Length: 110
Image 1: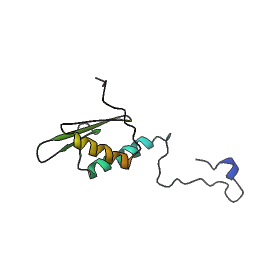
Image 2: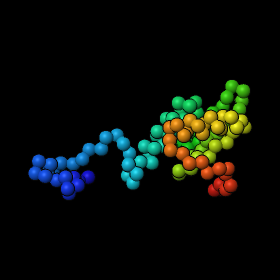
Image 3: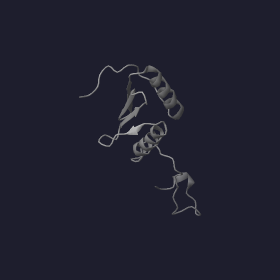
Image 4: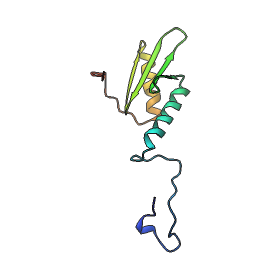
């Protein structure tokens, strides 16, 4: 990374800008950093990340009810046998991330 032309002076020549622990869209690392933050959030909410498919998260309640969440690129699909837990999860996701709800699933690849 180079210093922007308007910022280059004699005392800054040969120096670079240092990014402070923030991801920027367009950088190769930004999806990885976003997914790390997302998976950390899901783990804090009691979800277990799948070992065979790392984009699959499940939460099994003591009464056997199950919530399944899967991430596909920038979409999240949530299913459960209890609508209250889905609403709770959507609220928690809105608290942690910028979310746009697209409604019920109409089509899924493969």
